[in-house]
Amino acid sequence: MTRTILLRLALPLALAAASTAPSSLVVDAMSQELQRNFQALKQKADPPPYFLSYEVTQEETYSVSGTLGAIDASTGGKSRTLDVSVRVGSPKLDNYHRVRGTGGGSEQFTTSAPITYEDSVNSIKHRLWEETDRAYRAAAQRLIRIETNTQVKVAEADTSADFSSAPAEVSLATPAKLKFDIEDWTGRVRKLSAHFAKYPAVLTSRVTVTGQAETRYFVNTEGARLEFGRPFARVFISASAKAADGADVADFETFEAEQPDGLPDDKAIQAAIDRVAKDVTALLQAPEAEPFVGPAILSGRAAGVFFHEIFGHRVEGHRQKNEDEGQTFTKSLGNKVLPEFLSVVFDPTQHAIGGEDLYGWYAYDDEGVKARPVTAVENGVLKTFLMSRSPSAGIEQSNGHGRRQPGYEVVSRQSNLIVESAKSVPERKLREMLIEEIKRQNKPYGLYFRDITSGFTMTGRAGLQAFKVIPVIVYRVYADGRPDELVRGADIVGTPLASFAKILATGDKPEVFNGYCGAESGSVPVSAVSPAILVSEIEIEKKAKANDRPPLLPEPATIEQEGKQ
Image (cartoon, rainbow, N blue to C red; front, side, top):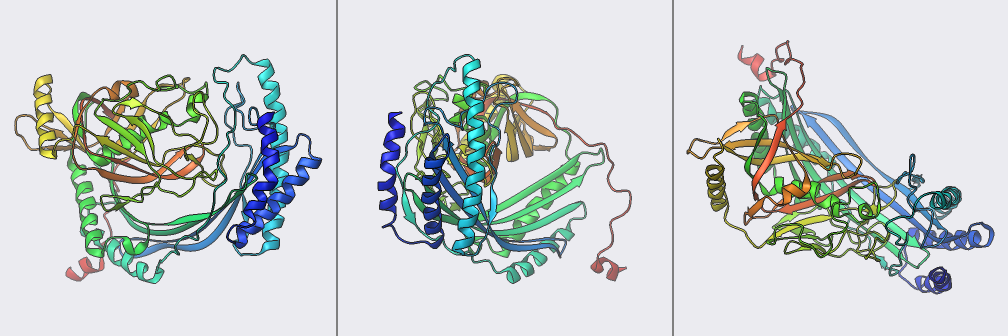
């Protein structure tokens, strides 16, 4: 009760202070409607809200995609999406509290709404009014269900509050405009994608270039007023083929930058196309991997995905509070969870590392909390979790990791995961250590995972506490001096706690993996930065395989081929 009273007393002062902040038409319209709607609901609604926030996400996106010298997709446009968060009850127990039991969980109970991308104050305010009324009704109904649930269920192990206070951040910084020349990229993609025609074994191929500028406008009843954002740019190269036994093989390469003019030139992109096409062609002839347990090296990119899947998701704060989760590390604060030579930092303030742009940076999270670096593990010891404004036992405040895709509810999520090592050796030495480990274990070979496309992990206690990571390029490494042997059809599988204990050493060159992570709050951009790691034991299983044969009809001849006949 005391915290709620303090919040209400502070509100007029916070809103008054906000009125002297720098001006933004969208933020001003949002702030005015926020104050009007909040005051009206406090006077008329039962139960009254104690907190209200608006977030508008503006996206300007352009994309060009081509295959074999022809453009097959070209899109562009601008949109805005509104998310309204209404909290009723009190910070101790409100409508965001998890409903336990069958049909409960962290289900979606509000949805986003499209809003005009024109700076029309009347249209913006009308949409805010409509969505606030809808969101309040859903919040009030859910609170009734939650209060009933708490009366008929056993006491929860974690009795921390549902919401925590946070400083009212004020910053109006219009992000850099996207510089995407769609005509120039159309010509370049046409030329670049045609390069795949040199590789007849490749069944499908694609080159896609995307430029996106994201602007977020955020206000809340604590006085936050924010306008911030960032541009993205990406080249995505992919190719696939089908082996004689029906197995699908594929490879990919990506380049990322903040602006399209930061992407590589055509020579570098063409070299990547050659690598991808040659890898796919080689995979067609490679032997199928067999189930195996033994020592391995994961390249930096592969290790980044490995840590993201098996470690990063398990230190997200909301998983420590949810009793349906496996809670791998919930009771491990202050304890050793990784080898003592490893530290893990999540730093959304880092824009680039080693000259490579990162995808997982942001200025503020989706609850208006300022981004900051978070040392989750220091010298092997777990120090904290990634936190949104939903507290968990022993950690009351957010550390700037409340994130969501528009249309989802905020939960704690990863940003830029950075693995640091005090036991790093040059790449050549790491390979020598792998050879020694193969001999020590008397294994027929070890493994080298050059690249990984994705992965997933099970964190719920009702299922298996396991993970699967999907490699694309894997080699057998022989201790007797034979050349490395490319294999196909291997997936990495395992359980997290057993896997952490088997890390022996790391390389000395960090590598970057950029991508998107999908979880409870939708898809968010993330990065994983890690040196290569040597593990004493890793398990692979055979990848699921299709039964379809390769195409029966011969591939059409190109114009160049027809001219030679």
